Length: 175
Image (cartoon, rainbow, N blue to C red):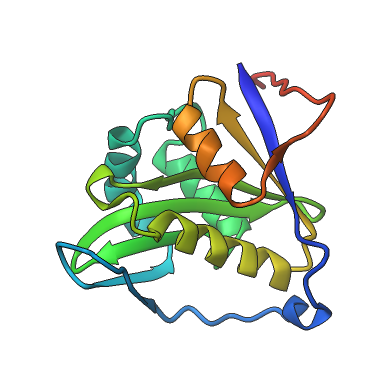
């Protein structure tokens, strides 16, 4: 069972709607961090694919399914340039977020932080960067799917203002 969760960002200022192509890494200080004190974030590139899959496989609640192969992710990234993000500690990818939109709604998939790096704000940072990109693209509503047995994931999303969409449930079909 999946829950549809959404966030309404329509209260954000209109000045955030300008599209920017800035792709420079963001520097984040992660307080209390016991490994590297600096974590960079940047645009997800298809060259990050293998490392991203490794992170997804280590994170409970993330299921790799059809469309998550290299070809599918490359197509997703090409359709949504600049929106998906990775967090890096030196050469290692330690967090991933797939982000895109269909012209009306934004979607975030596979937001995951390596278990050794969880609880230090990286998931929230990746989420914020995804939402900022969607706002710049003019998106006002973002939707995610959370697996029904992913309690920790559901708590993360609810902590940041996301809520279940009443009366909605996910449906799908393979084509």
